Length: 83
Figure 1 (cartoon, rainbow, N blue to C red):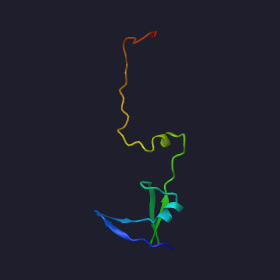
Figure 2 (figure 1 turned 60 degrees about the horizontal axis):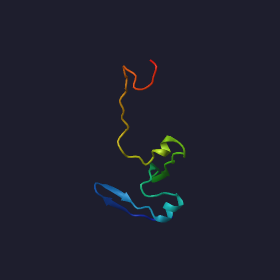
Figure 3 (figure 1 turned 90 degrees about the vertical axis):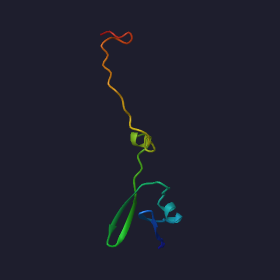
Figure 4 (figure 1 turned 180 degrees about the vertical axis):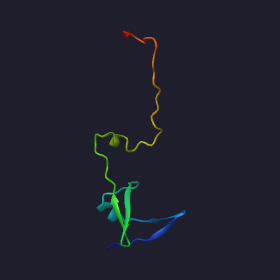
């Protein structure tokens, strides 16, 4: 069993996770985890990673603005289209 210290961090509190546990759980900085409590215990569960090849995986690190577009409805052909 490993012991850790809860410290004040701004208006919240923080729990430092020892590197041994981070390695065992294959966690990195800024990974998201689920927290739940049960019988005076805190249960930390690793959030599943998106599968490779999915849109979620491709955009997992994207933090820019959302994609915006306008619908074009041309009244005249713009090229060689046959209307």
